[in-house]
Image 1 (cartoon, one colour):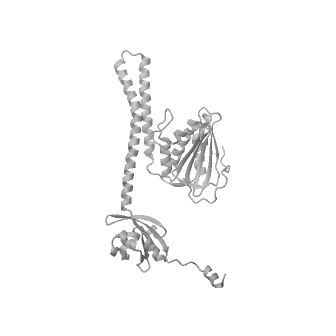
Image 2 (cartoon, rainbow, N blue to C red):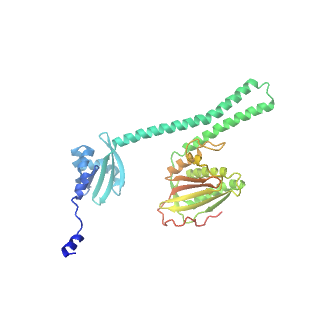
Image 3 (cartoon, rainbow, N blue to C red):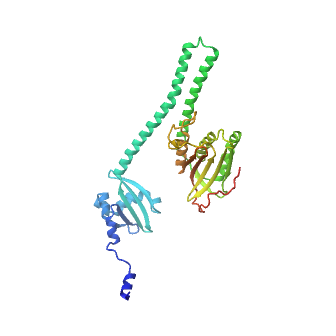
Length: 363
């Protein structure tokens, strides 16, 4: 290869597209404000289409007041996304602090997108409400009809009926009332935590307190609870009451699945992944049938004779409000594993290695 050819090969390829040309092809409004000189340093053609006003697009004062001033305390310091309503249009925009004196803003008109999302949310909300009310009607309607039949029979025949028959009618009526009370309590629990108060707390400390509260009842049923949680697992950001309720629902499900099993046991382990800690709760119970797994988080779906199908729905809601989640794997006649993710108070300092936990709290 000749010297000229070698030099040409080592030269970087030059594209006919400059950065300015590329920015002009983007359908998103792009704006750069010079905060020191208080002037518009750059704006692409799409910004005029998005905002629809030539005067606004070239006025530093108006652009600053519209996009930066309302969020100046937090947005200018780092990347952040916001929305603003202007001239009956809704704009979504992201602010980047490109340099100490420059503020870069990406703008989109999201009016139509917001309208369609609102319609979809309204439809989804109505579908969910219809589903829930249908379930409530069914769950309350059955015991209510039974109660009405018992009281009607009692009203017609109370003079002729024996004491034993009267006691049977009353017991049946009270049982039906109890079923309705149980449903109402569950619905109260569903709306109890409309807001959560997140605090940093040691997961080890929380689990020690939780296990101390439940282990007596579980041991009385012959169920052992074994834990292996590293002492250095760190702190999580949780609402203590909400997480207690969520775990109580999970443990109650495990207790139901362990009835009649030989050597029933619940294993609790943890694992860090990124900025989350996963709490694993595994039992050796009867497991869940594949057809039932599809409907685990649907309201009023239950295989328990006395259940109402709200436990896991409430649990997922509580965890979501704490920026957590729940996943369930189950194997018929082998057991169930529930994985609960919780946000760490700080980013994980150690990458997850082996899935085997380090024993620390051991019961």
